[in-house]
Image 1 (cartoon, rainbow, N blue to C red):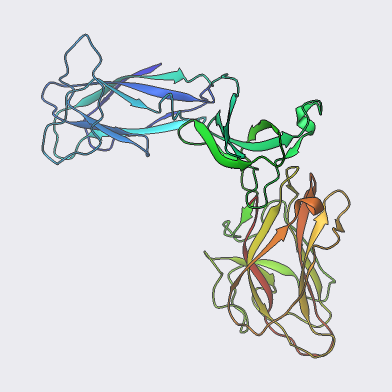
Image 2: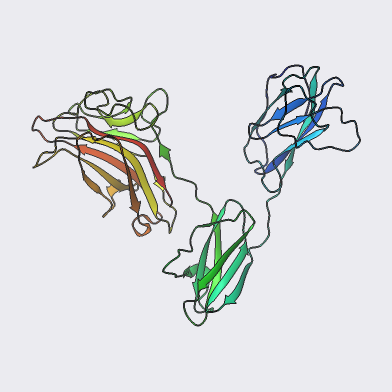
Length: 380
């Protein structure tokens, strides 16, 4: 409990509560003020509440007033609550701004902040199955932040159930099903795939998007974990604002991109690579590589200057067979969106790196080169 704050202005200094010991919580704010004050406000940046402090009562009166007309009187209240049992707060710190509402006079106050843990549910996962003609309707209780896979087997003796496969359906993939906002997930008309079928729902934490890089850290520099190498001919991958005569006129987004010689043309005999940090691909999941590219090369009929993208096994930095994106060339046609599926069977359970590589010949024809921006690897 943190307590004892008075204010006499619209925007006094904020209060920061840090090192919150709970992973899920809500905050009760006890509201006070002066008799001549008709309206104060408090906000955590996501929710804002107004109150008239003249709620003299032994009972707590909750404010839900989220809007205010200048010069009016707010609803009488003496407590505001941020977060809830259904949608708890999760950050390890929270910042509150508070003060007099516009047009209000006098002074306001905060009697205290109380951090209240919201316990996580230990409710067991229960699957309900109902026959629907030749198919099945299934439902189960779900939790926020989790995803679900539907597994099945024709034989109950095939144990443990963790060895069962994803249920087969030519039209639907029963994998990575997100938790429903209602707390109950439902599937209808699931094909039986035979005269009898046994089902299991597997629960796991929802995967987070894998790193996205827009190269807009300030000052412009190579992002953490990214590495470069080159042949020493004077061409290297650099991060910054493109300014060369044949470079893109701007980055694809923001101020910066990564490119071969960010302020000019590449040179003959280039072999330059830009490599991402290690990226872990969860077992059993396809991944999607996406990026924006600008390419300006010599377009030679033989031995042309080319860009490549390779997916490396981070264990030994060797390319994973079948995943190279080769022969990238062009004539400064602007930024384009690129995306490539990394199938689960090729990257299953691996830690990978993404390598952007550029090679040039020795014919003396040099151009803008290879630029990338907004690189991401996600789980579709």
